[in-house]
Length: 592
Ligand code: BGC
Image 1 (tube, rainbow, N blue to C red):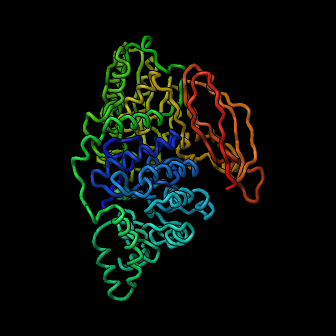
Image 2 (tube, rainbow, N blue to C red):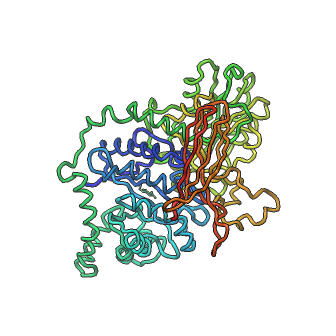
Image 3 (cartoon, rainbow, N blue to C red):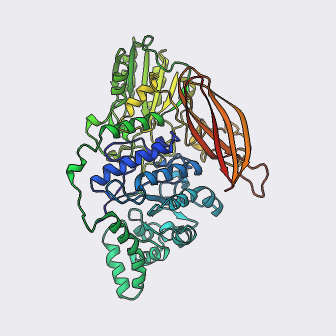
């Protein structure tokens, strides 16, 4: 048996969600986090993970934005390929690696209405320029499986699309692994897409398209067997699908030993080395969005601190696809603060994790507790935990038409702000949230995404300046959901006229993120080289703290036969600079 499992951002050691990991722009760290996830899950009996998700996110209403590496095809590609290398190693043999799966092919991350599985109706140009490159590069990197998408593309359900699953995937890119269906999506061709009257109709459509494995259930097996017996499909069609699946099982050694030894997981799951990487990943995933100078916090100035909000002290910070973990394996913001600043007198006003039912009375209670405090730290955001399926507001199948802070969360922040004490807001959330008032009014705003097992420790370290934040947004944040689609690599005409009653610029742009330091860029050179050009420049840390900076290189076409995006990311480098230090950065832009 080949066991597949959604190891999306960790198995027992939970890393930040992919969107958070993407803020690090650190390919080595993403690869290492994936290697650890592969090792922990493989030792536990998992052979295959349905990850990385290399969908390019273009609609913040879609609840699965947090599963992606963001909105930019280049960044998604680089991190997707890093993930494949971390998960599969050279060829997923041995005890440390699993088979990776690039999903979902293709285009489901720009659904109409922002609803999971809804159709998209994009041009083939957009499909090929924006949505397909990450898949192509994962195939080039040796990914062994690909999952089809829920949605239809150009009027054809992706599970029945020969164009996507055979012509492009195998024909153009030479993919030689196997294609798996998404959860019951072949049956959905009959029920939802209505492209077939019977199961046999849709099974036949998916086989024609190039599907190799059905997830899940016995109907497919019996029906396909019947189709072979009836002479509707040749045995050779079955062999073509079975061959790469069996090859994977041989490579994994499942015919020699299908079992795992439980004893091997001891000392490995959530071990010190894994925790250290999860902490680093959380630190690098945090984006400082606003700071009026209050951060890093001075414990001598802010002695009595109120900590409140729904996500200050629970497991919601683990994000979608994570299951309940032993309490001692999760460091919440509340716990992190006490560990990082023991001299501060913290008071917790816990509002419970369920943002659907926080009451105005609870808000008034928090305000009462703010009396006599020097500062309030408010942890707000969204809940993506799948074991809170009915209560969550984000994650798979939890899409929203309004992406502001849900329920009483903004009233809570406003009420605390009205008391006159400084308010620092920390967000733990799985999708961009439109927080215009908060951004303009609070003393500091931190985007922590869903930072995983050690997330609370990382947040506290950033608040108290033990870590200088370096995360950069991998996605644009709309001011309002009415602005969607918002993405930085748009055509000039996308923002031709400003809105009559509000700004058309995003609240935060792709690539944005503050530091406790400042940087100076100088001495830009662009020189021809073999196969492209080399862009080089100097970056100096002009602030008072050691810092990391992500130097980003964008290109734009001055003139072209078709309209091109205003700018497109084509290279970057993350550099570490001591205070006062200068480094020269070189980024090669290939002709491609
Ligand atoms: C999701 C996939 C996931 C699968 C298996 C589906 O609902 O779309 O991303 O891998 O379930 O859990």
